[in-house]
Image: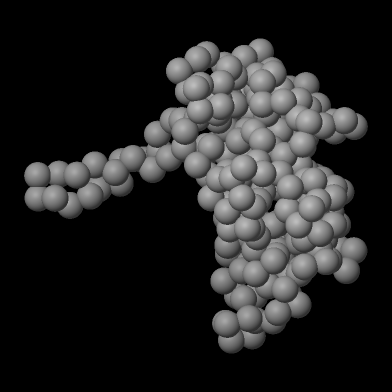
Length: 217
């Protein structure tokens, strides 16, 4: 791979975001009281280290060796060659993650959010959605997703808003997409009474298409 870790090497012909937003990604903050019981204290600010770990975890689940991964951003690197977590946000917080698997070069790039760590978390969330398709046997859909996941259609040509039961004019957030997906997956999962393998594949494809559109907007 010829891509640089620093500065950002944005993939050719990928649309850039002009109006960035604050992300809703975060890390759970447990608090241990005197009895030793952990209490959930809400979400904390996602660190660069946490975001990188999410990327590493998702790619590891795909079977991608760490040495085959390049995280490219406008954040200077530390001695280990990864983006530093002690610097301010660059004017361009976009990220691109490049990797090779089975001899194929693949990439995901997101610049929707104001913080580099949140854009990395968005890439990880999209990878997680794609991995769900792989788990349910949608190998051909997965291959198309990695070629151009922003153009991935929902299965059978249905718009993702129709499958996820959003109105055509709605512009849902990442959180609302995930909540709607989980609610529908509860009933459509093949292990549930009345669930079906095909319905779950369609739902997974709709989730990927929805996240791709939201993150690329």
